[in-house]
Length: 212
Ligand SMILES: Cc1cc2nc3c(=O)[nH]c(=O)nc-3n(C[C@H](O)[C@H](O)[C@H](O)COP(=O)(O)O)c2cc1C
Image (cartoon, rainbow, N blue to C red):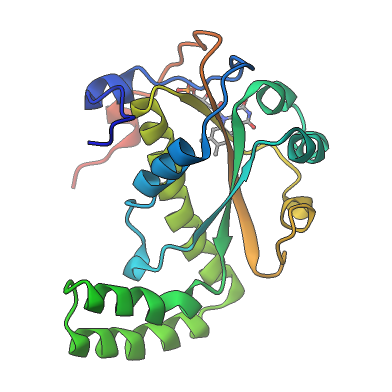
């Protein structure tokens, strides 16, 4: 367990979580701690382990000022959070397949022949996807990372709000990314809570589940 982890009770992390929109403006998250949070976040699973999530940590006054007009009704989170983490999915994530599989081979976690087989199968599948298909794949993977980030943040003593209300058509370009390649998935505000948040309800399990 990382030294910075403050809460290590899984049910407390899950059941105590609420979307927090107002944060203590005086609390920043150091780069070292943010890197630890993101490293734990990237332990999330992804299809063929291609890890298509890409993060932009918006923490400086200048970058937050740029983000502000793009977050619609979510300016409080932008103004008070330690950081707004933009999550994009890389539509060309398969370009890192070889690097990832090589890393696994070097670490003794994947035999060389498995690497070669995986590469020869994965690349044609990914390059053969339609734009909609690859979009769905990277959004699913990146959303899993988003959820993991929310839970990891709580372990480190911070709270979050997943934000879908933003100008999706402007986000990548505004932060220097190629909009044809990087699809915006969500924005997560993170910081030290300055409110309790709202208690929310859930549909009963019976209503959202069928057993066959
Ligand atoms: C994909 C997604 C998009 C969301 N977008 C916003 C948003 O733009 N602004 C906001 O205040 N909350 C947003 N939320 C938070 C939800 O309103 C919140 O999760 C829900 O009401 C349940 O409350 P809880 O998170 O406190 O359990 C979003 C949540 C998700 C998962």
